[in-house]
Image (cartoon, rainbow, N blue to C red; front, side, top):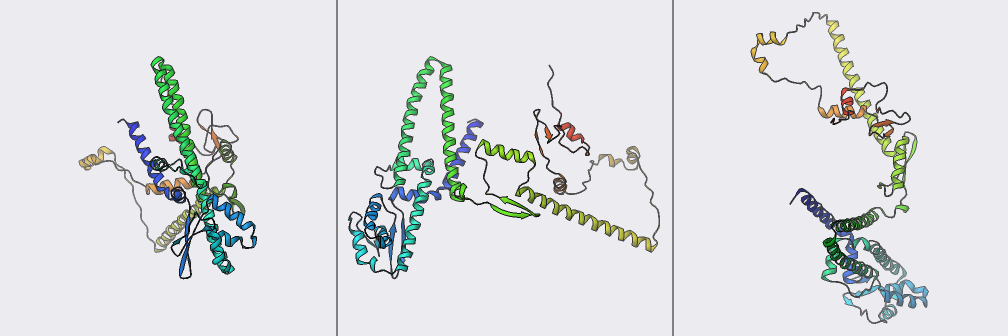
Length: 402
């Protein structure tokens, strides 16, 4: 296998691992597909009851029955949603079972208990709506296709099952059309190599677009589960240095317009909440370094003053030697490796360089070099700062002469 095949295999393995890690998100979807309903066990006194989501037929019967008795619609809703009482399974095929449950038990239950039981039912309904919302994303996962191939659902009793079945049937039809298209490509390739290459490129582009749509569907579903609907998210407002700033949810740009707006804000030099936090962070460490420098200077001044008060005097003579003279004094000194004295830790030097660097406003010019906003100059540095040799070398553009 060549390097591209190894990288492709590694990428596919990583995608499978990520798909497995997020499978817990689709727990309700898989339960609806396999069993047809979501259930909830509710303790009640010394016993318990089991509530479940309603099928389309049960929902229709509940609406008709509660329309004639609107004062007790919650009790009818609980009666239709109850599938088991103290382990005794109620017959789902008996259309009058919810009626008997209402007449013999629920109409005598206190209102407080009815409100608590109905809250469980509303929780099941919210789980059902959430599962329906992410069913399309579940259909793009590999384990969805595996389940369809091993145990396809022929009867759809709920919306999730019908959506899952329709998606997989459409995928089956696509795979069948793709096999026929590959047969057509082989026939065209036997007559024209150029035509076969064009058809292959078109097929590969379509497959790549399809994978991108599937990936975006999964990403949108996961983001919705984590953050909810984007339009309903209220931004957080904070005050930094007397300036009120808006802190929205973290979202990547999804369209060309959003990317252009983000770019223009950077070009105009508009600072957001993150930029102000970075400025505060730098100012804090700059003040801390300046305080440490002043403390060292004051300590040295005190030491010099104390030395002068004691009357210590003398002189120091600095004598320099050439390498030849040093070799005469000690011949082994030439065999010693040259040492470079470090003024401080490399991490500290990098951090100080980061503190002294300010992010300017500008863009990348047509020739690929940075330009300062408003000047059009290719120089990214300030005019009062001399240009270093390293900056000159980095701007050199190598050319190959014939």
